[in-house]
Image (cartoon, rainbow, N blue to C red; front, side, top):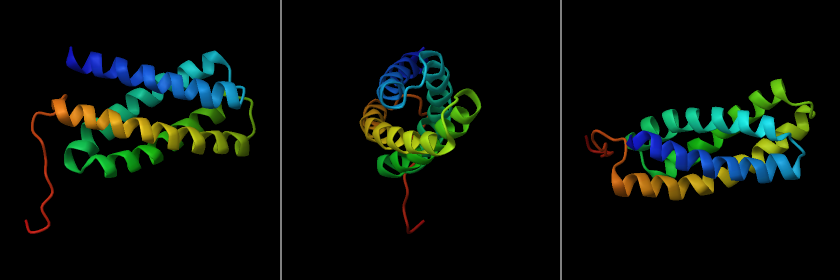
Length: 127
């Protein structure tokens, strides 16, 4: 149940950002925004929030979210959108950076509440 709540929050924030950047700024259809949001929310939650964040820290996880978001948005958009590849890459870069800022605060929420983590990993350069 906890994962459902967290994924719903993440999906809502992702939808708003993708709609503002790709929908309003780049003219992507609402259907394509929804498809992109669902794919991005699920992939970034599984990879960024449940795998990378517990093993590293908020900054590393947020930076990795830029790459994850860029790849998901750009590659998926090339298949579902009629926009040009360069236009999609520009939109993906802008959306990825804005999403990473939101992810930083989302990660802070996850870390404070230990949501989804069976144990918290820490990095020690001496071990």
